[in-house]
Image (cartoon, rainbow, N blue to C red; front, side):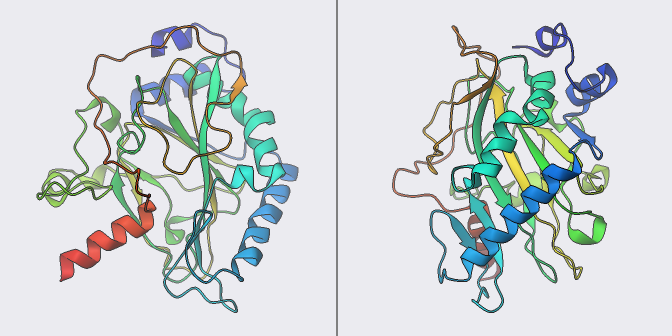
Length: 299
């Protein structure tokens, strides 16, 4: 669906001003919209993953570990597909008001794409370099968005999500280096052309959500504070957005309709969509991929 078609449908949760802001700027911050009882349940689920990670010694398809992770001092970068490993998280993604908020921005027919839980530990939790999401999982149109739920208060010192307003309306840059290798972020030449002083950092209290379009340039700095900031992330799309490629992390709930019904027709945006590399041989997380790029740059 186009933004004009989506806006013809009555809003369920958001105001018309919020919906218009999202389509114009490519992102939205909604403060304290998630009830406290949900936040408490999600915090408990998040902590349970940390406890489970104590028994993991190397990254696998579920747990992505920082290099200095230890059983007595866990440093978990990411849990992939947390929705299929904890029923509370899937209930939140599919049955809470979160999907109603998403419907206000992608249309009444909403499908789930994938989820992840990023931790960004205290005292050095890793940065995420500037990138576009759509380059990882291209679709027939640009309705997909990612919604993040702040489980704890997040200020600038915790390394919050940063976005470049209106970048979703520009031509997309390839996320390959000068040698044609996939790096999962802007290469140095494209990054040098960006005015990062325009970045807006989405800080807020626990229970707030961030939403950004799949074309919006975004990233986050390192967490240098003494407080971690787990961020639960889900990607949703309009039901008429069809993936061009198979998701390499194989989410169990991928393509599940969480609001409305399945699309009878695919909607194709005329703007071209960049393609990722062939991941049939395996997938490296964005953290591992971008850190590998940084290490190669210093060699």
